[in-house]
Image (cartoon, rainbow, N blue to C red; front, side):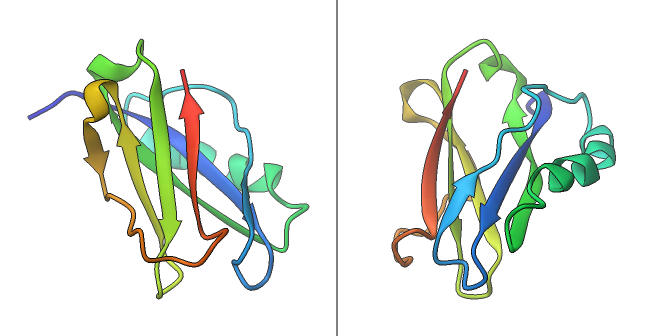
Length: 112
């Protein structure tokens, strides 16, 4: 089993979820999902100027935290957030986003 850390991805969207923007949160990794989820309500507070906020704690392989990674996301037909972390050598970790989504309903957020 791979050692994981957790980070928050927060998006602010319009009512229809057609346009979403990345909402910065403290650049911080959490040792456990529970610790990350304890901070998640504060991250939603950061997105309160948007009609809809979507966010989640995402798992990141610990060996990637000192590397440049990208967070790819999409919103599926059930309006659920799908997230993947893309690390060195284009390795993907997580729920790889669908490519068949409307414009504005997917994104790529570089980090690190």
